[in-house]
Image (tube, rainbow, N blue to C red; front, top):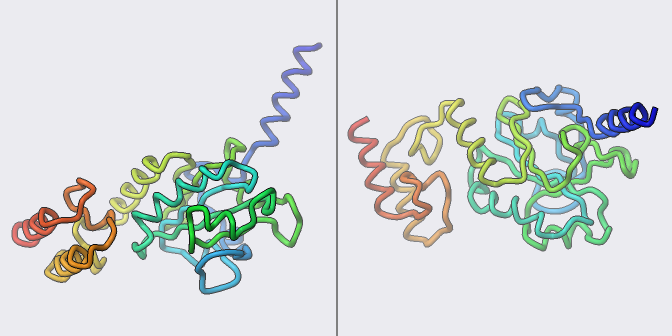
Length: 231
């Protein structure tokens, strides 16, 4: 009898951590259009819908204000590499604001400017909408990756895993290495963008790093010339 009770308890516990979506599922139009209030950061509207970013790779963190603040640094690393890329949109979901960190405090720790939303729909505290949709394991501190077709592609705590997923999605969508301005060709305009970036001392951008050595320099320009001349 005790074993049966234990098995029932484990089963019920597993149900409590079940999510709406699993890897490979497509987010429904209804859920794509669900509005979330933006409480912090740069965004052109007071509400954010997944459908606002349709056609882009969407990455967002599942966080709670009572987690250690180190949890917020994963998205910061991704912002450093991809914030300039119009094909990618990054935001953060913050549950339980004020316990102890407010939206402003959480954002100012490491992610100044990133849109931060709370997923308590209709002011129902504890509804945890996005968390319940995507947190397969019932954990915070994870990042969700949706591709340009709103397919749930990855749930992870690793920025390296997110990088891999981004490159896979871009490859599937026909992205061309060296196409810096995303006009479906590699030409002198792409070279000029990298030259301007080097001359202005701009920060490292993933898409500019043609040889993937984490440095933007003359070697990347040479490789772009090779692509233009010989492809």
